[in-house]
Amino acid sequence: MSNDRKGIYFILIGMFFLSIQDVLVRQLAEYASLFQIMFIRGIVGSLSLIIFLKLTKRRIDFSSSFPFLAILRVLLFFTGFLCFYFALSKMEFAEATSLFFVTPLFITIISKFMFKSEVGFYRICAIIIGFIGVLFIIKPSLAGFNYFALLPIISAFAYSVSMMLAKYTSGKESVFQQMLHLYGGTVVLAFGAWLIIPFIEFEPSQAKNLEYLIRDWSIYNNSVLLMLLSIAVIGSAGILLITSAYRIGSPPVVAPFEYIMLIFAIGNGYFIFKEIPDIYSLLGMLLITASGLFVFIREGVKQEPIAMKTSLRS
Image 1: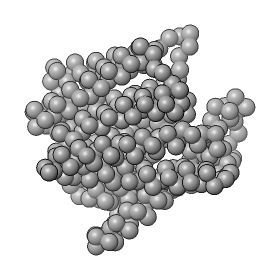
Image 2: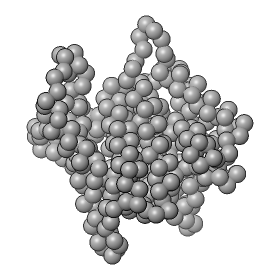
Image 3: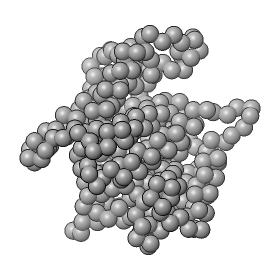
Image 4: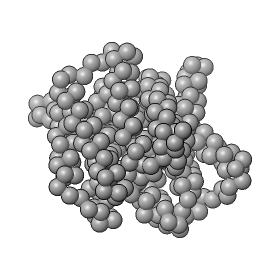
């Protein structure tokens, strides 16, 4: 079996694991704190990576040759996924997931300015089409605009910038250093939020909307504990699989298969949460998917990889 085919299998299994993680994150919206979830996910991820490095006799190194950029990347990554997971509790499942997949379009734009990458006419058209798809999903109107629909887009932008920073620092930092920064930073930031939130006063309407973020950390029963641990373990396994896919396979070949997540999201939304996207949302998903896939295909043809050798969802 070729490395590219192995990479594709790893991507498919990894995205399946992450889709399960997303379902659990949404189901815990009534029982746990999102910061609590991210804290436990960071702890499990850190311990898993440290054990892996120990077993493979690799160096455990939390240092950085670019400390300011490392901190900025952690802040962006943490903020981005906080926005995405919060959006899952406020939006239809498939819509939130599809909006996040504008990431390749943001990476294309950012790489133009950070790395002077060539962005030709066809890629510009793909970007425009992708953002038209965004408009179909969020359906902006003065009468009833859903501001929560902006959260997955903010998440995609923050993630894209963090990935570009990872590319910029990759010459002097290993992928394991970068992952340790992200996991360790998640633990510190989530714990810091837990310390600060009790001192912030919220209006009753704000408190109700932000309950998933500001709720006290507690474990109501064994089912909640099992779900919290499952999110951490399954999420870490998904990231490991997808990272491995990019390490053994060609990014332009394996990256398009990440879009299997949209199929998982539509299925989970329908069978678990009884959600059926309307025709405009489905059209938007199609446009976003087509534009993202086109960007990846152009990467392969032009041999100008702008996608990072890591998952869109790691």
